[in-house]
Length: 317
Image 1 (cartoon, rainbow, N blue to C red):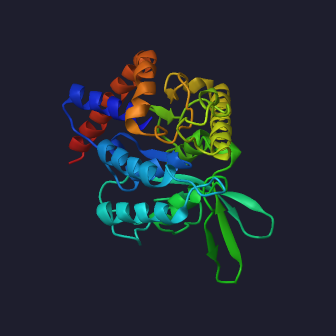
Image 2: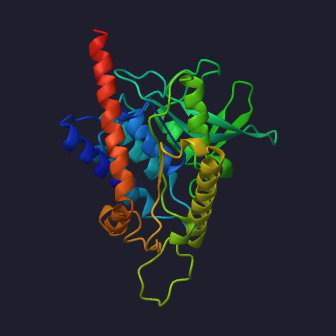
Image 3: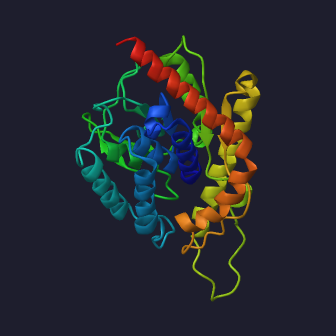
């Protein structure tokens, strides 16, 4: 969906003649898992779409294309790529989540904390201080590792607490893989007097687009391990369920809520193709045509809102 968002923002720039970064079109960005990683690239590091796609592609090529014997991905090369990213675009390995410079786009990722007592609780790792909740300070790298801490994909990260106990960070969990409820509730608490201009939700594809059938023939390209494909299917199913529930519970938002997730084609898990930009364009073109009316409507709203913000800024000078 990075490619679809890039196309939308290119259209915004062409129509408005106003170049801008993705973070300049949103007051709040949230995500979980790879969506959380992307959210932090756009919101915390304030990258352009092209730079964000470049960073994501690097993770795909150096991490997602290789699995361990048990089927999950290696942590060390993943952390190496993350360090390269923050050394290039931020303040190095110790880049903090809270402490942004320049215009802010509030961003958070959804995680869970397991404190070894058997109690697992949901948590938001934010790039800002919430007025009513205690701040949790961590680095960019730690936040990405935490939100992608699905045991089937990566070994979850742990921290040693001052009292000698160990906290394990896990991914968002079934109810928060699609963080649309979290995002909306957070927006209402941060901006209680403002109306929603647009609420955009990007998915990685519906569950039926993940092919769980066994490989046919010994000469076929190697596929992602079945545990990875099963996990992807489960994540997509949870996200679909949450998206449908959110619209049912918030019917008044129908005119401002935009959900995009491709439902055409099939992710077959071949490691030479999975998540590669050129291969994903095969899915994007027919899907982009199918949602052209909705995406064009959103583009118009993004232009109108940006012009309103710029005009308000000029009036206060």
